[in-house]
Length: 134
View (cartoon, helix red, strand yellow):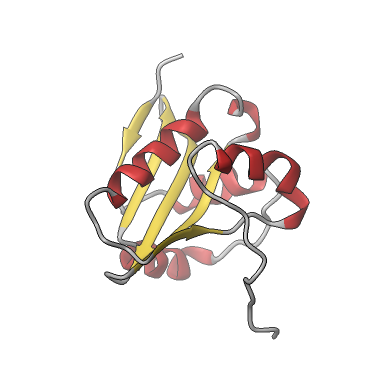
């Protein structure tokens, strides 16, 4: 299977939502919010099977720190190397930059699969993360 790659920020929001739905991420952000998110992202990477978005990931950086967000592969395309394509592309963007840290989130319900996957790329689990409770 041959996939195409894109680094464009002007993406089809319905395709992003469909991709997120395929893995159970149901927090649709809406057209306006996605446009804002994409425009503020430092780097956006998407993977396609013909015209269907099957993978996505993005970076947010401030010059000192870098965070990977929304790394997702369509449920029907997992195990085909797309996650590796996404991670390698995102990591390539961090080369030669002197970040204090490069981080990402792995939700607890996905830890059995995602932690070993991210470990392959040099990420380590740490216990000091916190977030503001709403």
